[in-house]
Length: 65
Image (cartoon, rainbow, N blue to C red):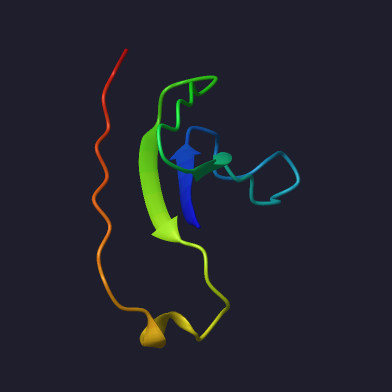
């Protein structure tokens, strides 16, 4: 699956624990509205150390509505 993550949170909370942004699955005709603006990161969700056997390409179009 193609995963999207909006980095729109502070890096850490008051105790020093890392805070992730908003993560979501990107599929055909995915429509996602984040709670706040931030940087968009996209990646293939695969098992750790198994990315090396992946082949092909992905085309991703992002538009603002």
